[in-house]
Length: 325
Image (cartoon, rainbow, N blue to C red; front, side, top):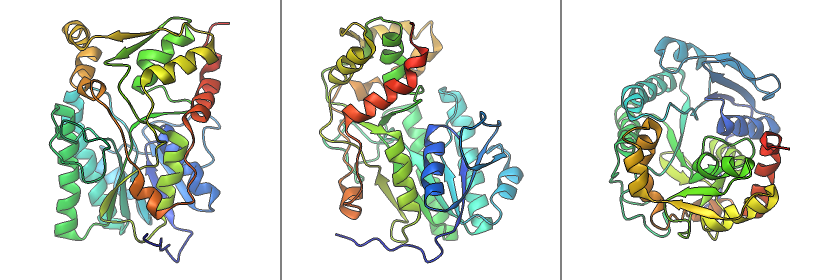
């Protein structure tokens, strides 16, 4: 087992670009360790959303991001873009370029919160950090291009980087996820859940507060750089049907889980743009999607991964005000 080596200056300056659930969870974890944290996004956060200082920064504006990163020791990319391939192809390379240039100018280390879209098929069981990179989707090819940009910046300019990958995520206030959008939102309305694909295939989900704590742990460890890490995720992986049966019980909703056939999703996508965007990623729901965080746990055996039952209860508690009474 490798022994973590932590930076001598534990009061580094962390700039987190993206104040969604992952960015906020990371900021909270760093703040709890006495770190100086600034959250940056294009819009002001909701009142009381986080204890971190907030900056209004557009990651597409290179000078703005570079100014925001002045004095930073760590620069995180945790932001998301509209789920449209045209937006991803246009904006993600610009954002990564701007982040790399800002990190190099300030001497900051760059952490990128990523997903598994760039992995080839069939998905290995389990998926580990050495999974072949051969994306079958347009969105996956964008993600692979971004990784190539990091590697090139390391080779040419000595960039210190780290990629932290997550499975599909869930947890308090998580709404931009397939688990919520296709299934739990319907359960909140006392309707049967849908699942886009096969609900009886195993499918891992990463608990967002765990992801935030893990990003903070990786950032403060001098031995984690120039490599990719799978963020801690509970095992064994459940099936969507198992998770959604439990969420239905907690919400008093029908326990039925209706499989929406992939062919139907693609047909509907001809008329509904969002379904068209989702359609190319549905291969992930037609096979076992089992995410391994063994590498992380070997380095940090004391890290407590939140069990699915506990995480699902916390997610339901955060969403319950939206349910009909």
